Amino acid sequence: MPTTFAIPPAEIEFTAIRAQGAGGQNVNKVSNAVHLRFDIPGSSLPPEIKARLLKSGDQRITKDGVAIIKAQEFRSLEKNRTEALRRLEQLVNSVAVLPRKRRPTKPTNGSIKRRLAEKGRRAEIKAGRRSTSTD
Image (cartoon, rainbow, N blue to C red; front, top):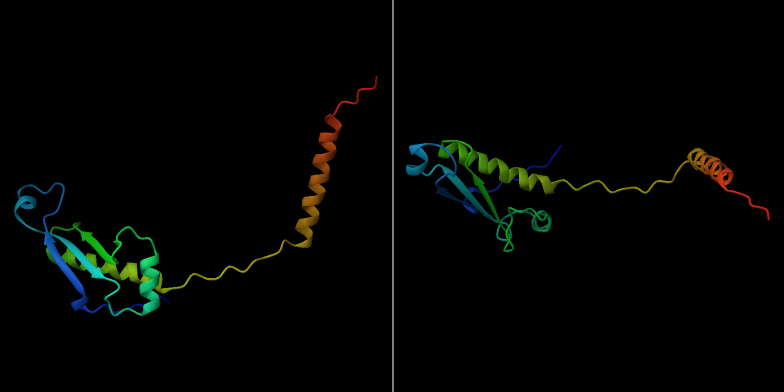
């Protein structure tokens, strides 16, 4: 079960901007798209989550550690705002769960024997292709 972190609304900054793309007259007059800015180092997230977020290499995170998410899918400002929040939560939750450690495994005895037997067969086939010239 993934752990979710509550992000206080005071730490999130929203800016309404004009959306790109088609939309007729509405797109030129109304600011429906949303830029969400979230300062990761200055947030109240646990330190290990902050470190993993900053190390994640996500293109939405700037060098200064500010996550910028642009939402312009909907024609409603409120829907775009909730979509941006959902994406931020998804970003934070993606680093909340640690990847499982890989346990090194060893090939089974049977697989080693099969591999060596096949190697021997191939060697015999190739040895049969060699020409033996006796002068």
